[in-house]
Image 1 (cartoon, one colour):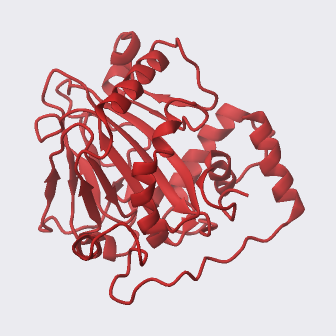
Image 2 (cartoon, helix red, strand yellow):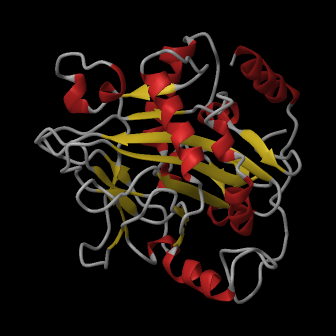
Length: 326
């Protein structure tokens, strides 16, 4: 991480301007996917209309079992990943220490782990990612989610939100999330719920919801959306993968089972996307929160911006270097 930080700071000092977004043509009939991609016309129409697409049985059980084993070793500290963020549910954090996997609800920013990062580089996943980003692809954000059994506080919920709220880069249409179920997920253990078509709207204001049971750190919720908007619960089997747009409003419900619900995900962006300043925008609150955490981890003497934090995370997974990863 130190070498990576020095590289980013050298680029900042050079004042090198970023390249513009790629002008790769997108078919006039389809706004959100690339021409001549793996998707069928039916799949392209579905994603354009709804903002998500589920591909059944995309990731093999053997691969998922390997990721699960690695996650457990991170939780027990048998494996240490540089730069990884380990998170606990607010209800667990306020109780007595719970050892190992049961203490952890999420690990993120594991791009430097050679085992988990295989997920981001999986050719079966990337051929679908390329349909949305184009051929030059950067991995921007990584997570293994371990949704715990709800302790009665409803804190295992994830409020409805748009992922673009967290990202200081654009354009949104060249960003996509890959989210893979590591076991069967349904409404009982808190599957994803999406608001189809909400990706065609704007980025909305996000804040912490006022929930009695508490809200997990950085679990911001979208403030303004229609409660009458249709919802779809994405019930998935192990290995099923959903790709979705960063403006799609989505979240997840409580885990009402006694087991932990696991999923692995990566956000990708075209390497021809570009970083933006979020000062004075609806993203200013998350920027301040992220920078506070960054100062705690790196020290107050390190001069970084919200954009720089994301530059540190980015990794090239396919194609040519560009604005996101040089």
